[in-house]
Length: 402
Image (cartoon, one colour):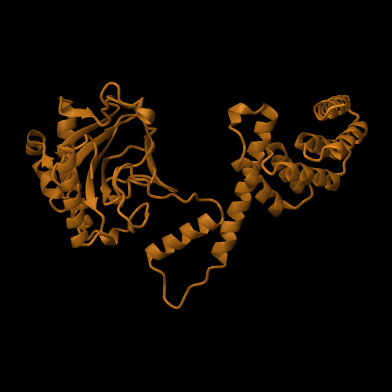
């Protein structure tokens, strides 16, 4: 018999054993199934499907420890074998080893196929696995917080928030997000989701003008003239990706006050109080690109999908003007709710998204802000590099704000 013939013979034997074992399990005879699966793994230790069948048979017999041993055999054959990863967590939980089970469930859920690709029983098992791991992570975070004692000096609000974020990340409750600028990445700038207010000493003076800015926003918004344009406006033929629902849609619209580094004359003339307030903001000055500022209007029941901005040399400011209940904003791992008149500054090169689940529109003032971590010399360097880039290419890409 040739080697190929012998291999086919072994494969045939294994398939017959597996079929017989599966039938035994189906008719409620796990003892016979376990014997057949045991014969199979003794012939082919590298078959994780045979090992997992043996594990299921032993579990049906009530021998959880032996079942767990068989799961280890499956994972030795294929470390990413999802059924074994999920069963390992379930067996550890049944054995009362909850912390080990939670850690096993975390691995299984991370490597699980999409819910749509698995059956209902597996979907329920995955949902349970996520619940067990979530409880474990919450207990861990609480324990870590309880272990944190005051230092020799009291922590500032910023330090306390950063420490809590660290605890959430250690406990596995918070994903670590990084800067992902679409176009321009300046090295050495930290990935901070929401920046501390103390870095922007002019912020309170801007907030003090909220009522005047809101009046001007309501005036132009109420007219709904052609100056209110879709926030997303890709030309025909351009790849719209996640923006397909919002491209050229007034569900998310803008009234531009500063665009591509220049005032939009007619719009700016209609909003003198807002333009005066914007003069307080430390905005980038880059020919053909910055500063930018607009009223952003998000209609009821509209979501802005996760995305990232173009450049980490500048941050983005939101001053909420009209915010019904049901509106929120996520940057990286932190979700906040806008409060009218309370501004924040965030790094839009970190993945972010927004939603308005209310029955009313939401309006905010948006503008760009220099990163406070760039020195005056670095700001000038960025301006010179971008000017040189535009001279070289002969073009400023549309929507390439910096």
